[in-house]
View 1: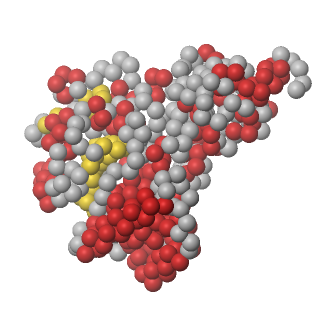
View 2: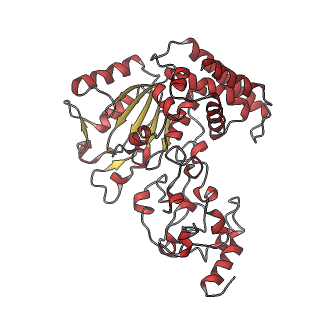
View 3: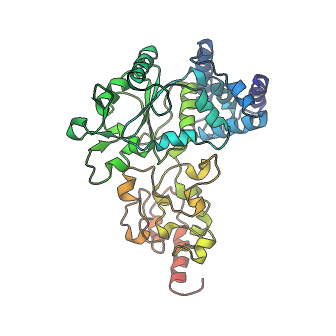
Length: 410
C-alpha cells in the first residue's frame, strides 16, 4: 500500500500545477514550499504511535483509486489548488505525529458519536484512528485516578504541541459548580483554563462548545457559554453544528499537519473551507426555490416532489455550512435530502432562534444576508439590495410565486 500512496503522490505531482485563484500563483508557491518544509520536519520526527496509515488502508480494503478520490476531495475542500494534492497525501501518512486531547464538558456526546459511527472503513475514519488520541474519557479504558494521570502525563509530554478538542459548553453559574470533574471537584472552567494554556490550538467541536448550544438556551440556568467567550490569547477554531461533521474535523487536522497553523477563519472563528458556503446556495432543492415551488404543508404534492422547504421553516438562507456538499453518514444524505428543513445548527444561539417548524413569514428572524427573513412570496424585491449575494434574480421568481398563491396559473 505504501507503493500505492507513493504512486498517487507522483500522479498528482505530474499533473499541471496551474493555480486558478484570486490569491495568485506566487502566494501558493510560497505556501507550497512552507508546507513541504513542515512535512519534512514531521517526517524526521518520531511517530507518537505505531499505527501505519498505509497498512490500515490495505487492511480495510481501501485501494489506490479510493485514496486518490479522497486526496482530491480533501484538497478541494481545503480550498487549495490541485498542486497541493501530493502534500495532502503525505499529510495523511503523518497523522500519527498529531497528539490530540479531547475533553467533554456540558454535552450529549453527539460529536463523539459522529466521530465513531462510521458505516464502513472510509478514509476519514481511518485518519481519526491514526491520530494520537491521548485522552478521551468516553473512549478510553482508564477511569478515575488512572484517567487523571493519563491526562496529566499527556499534557506534560506534549506541552505546547497537542491539539485540544473541546466538546460541550462550559457552565459559569454558581462559580462553575454546575459542572465539576473528578475527585478534586475541579470545575469545567478551571479544568479548561488549566489545560488550554499548554495546547498548540483549541478546537471547539459542536454547537455547545462553539456557541453554548442547547445548554445555553433560554433561560440558561447554568450560565452555559461557548469556548470563544472565555478563551484568550490562544488560537481557536470553531467547528459548529449539532453534531459537527467528522469531515470538517479531519479537514482542520490535515490543515494543521500541512501548515502548523489554523486555517483561515470567518468572523465567528469558523474555518472558511467548511463554513464559507450558505446552505441555500448549494441546496439540491434550490431549483424549486428559483421556480417559486414550495412545500405548503407536510405531505402535499410539493413535499412528494421534493419542492423547496423554505415556507416550512427551513433556515438554509441564513445558515453557513458545507453539509449540503459533504453531507453525513459517509456522504449518503443530509436533513434537507430526507425532507426536513435546515434548523441552522451551525449558527449562534440556533436553539432559541431557529430550531422550530413554523412558517418563515411568522418567524421574525433577521437574516444575515438580507431580505430572506420575509415570506417567500415577498422577499424577492428585498434581495435586490443584497449586493454580491448573487440572488437578485429571485425577485422575478418570487413575483411569479406570488401570482400562483393568488390562485392563478403562472
